[in-house]
Length: 341
Image (cartoon, rainbow, N blue to C red):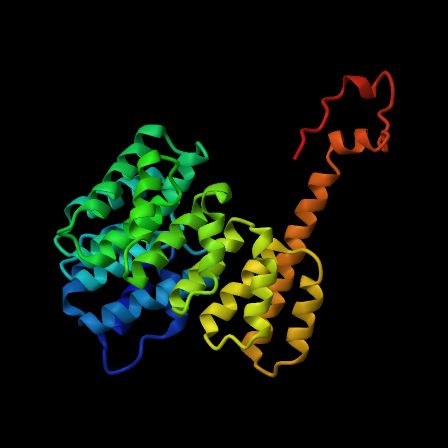
């Protein structure tokens, strides 16, 4: 993009008498250094509402188009004077997985003067904890993130949102002190704390430890708790939760968020009659959004069933069934065998 064409975009951005055209949002993707500098030179002349509308448009586009990249704009604006701008810049970084972003979010979590901004950083750091558990990022970075989140979660001077988001992100961690933190948070009377603890349980990949608690909370009187319990039941693949989740839907659960969480959990857990139940649910609703969601759940159910089938068709399983796959002798013997999936 030429500087003259980007100047047209800047002029349009400055003209607040008209809505900023959606067609321009994609032109901020992979922005070049000169254009970013030109944008920052006039940034202070743009009203806060206009800035937030622009960033919201970029975020909406990024959520629907994985090709777009607003990394450079986001990294620049995480230092903006306005907390609301910093929050949206952090949200734009949810699609970025590099260590530069991890370090920037750690710095924000530890040092930003606004606790809501720090809470957003805590939320986004969760994925890096997961990457650390999967050995996709260095252990020293994972430890830095975990330590920073533990500090934020345990500091009584911090606002509840910051502490709860830190707890939820820590759910991915295998550190023993995290389990203690989840337990103590769940024992609080506040439903929001219980919900955050359930979210962390679902992320823990530890069904043996949390299954009983999660299943018992599926029948809680608080919708927020039922929702997170349903989500956790799916993430932990709790087979014993299947019938309770189905009952939640057939007994006319009124909260839409709980309904969506229960449907999605069933699409992960799968099992007998789940597909039939989804098809029946679709046949008995005229709600277009619900129909779309059920279609997505059916696709997810199919995906998970296929994964299970691949596991059953691993070489070890086939050998146990009598060697349904026979390798050619001689030439074939020299080829590496497939790894068990």
